[in-house]
Length: 503
Image (tube, rainbow, N blue to C red):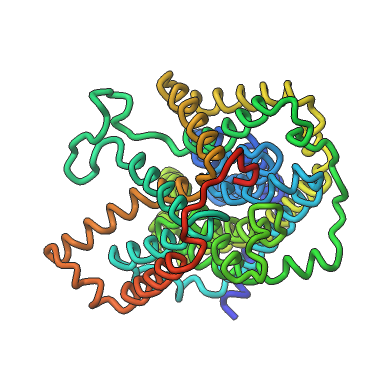
């Protein structure tokens, strides 16, 4: 009853003239930022902090929250149409979204992404309202050992990200682990694999790798196969209408991944990126026809889009109730809270209920705005497919270069972007899947830190994993997942000739 009364007071904030205006501004800016490769919600929120300094804290935080989930909502467009994920949380969206666009189903792919995003966002907001106190306790119970085991379980499912050889998938993941070690060791302060270059001390940015392995690799494929009509981007938007069978096919993944994505988002440090990968892997494991994934599967598109939007709301649980950021973006939001004189934590709901419930209520309204905003714009967004292929290739290259350079203003990042583009093309040519590389890069640093913390706590003993029930259960699941494909035909290395267009 208290939650209902609190929500009603939150809707008074959300439905005020100021509230509606700034929620709309937040989700509109977030959607636009998500569509542009190279930009992201972290940069946008950081820029808005000084702008909102003199604003009412409630209105300012409602707007910045809208930027966050709006960017994840809108990030699917560049992934689906250009295979250029600009937001880390939409990398998995490109696995099936881009093949659908190439098949002339861009309209359907964007509609599926919009509906799945709306479903995941709405369900997760309801869960946020109902279970924040309980899930906060669950999040706190996860220590370094449990986090390592959870991320290890995600990596052992790498075989699900490959339609070919499991061995090649693990080789790709190993390359990702190697790349993520470049830079300063966070524990010892020593430099690793920098070869004396000061520009590598901070490591390699995720966007450099994502745009290189996906966008520039696709450009290389299109250029070298420019005389092959089958490689042309399909200029047909296709129908936006979803059939009853499409909705039925989407319903299972959307239901499951709304809950799973929210729970993963609750765990501090996990966030939308990990949630989307785990959602994709889970649905592929559950599917009766897993071979359809990576070739334009509706389930393969709906699952990560539902999970990444559900995770954005889940990330607010530890932020609002514990004052602990659940993702990189909520870490910046924590700074915004403090700048505006608001201390998130256990006392927030008592001391500033209008902020706590105002943010939650704004998510209901914001998700409706996002659906209304995105569905009518699909025909206009998809017009990018009508751009002549030579011009489209040029635009992808330009946006990729500008996006990477705008982050660090470092020329070396441009060379690295080209290098990873060539690497991505070679991986396609020899059927090495890029997805395990990306997943290992995302999880590698966090896994290393969690393992070091765990061994520090246990004085170097690995027995701590046996003493932690949650960690032990996750490791057993990981071992089973790891061993099964190695004893099947899928684990054998195959010699593939030519370019794998579905890699």
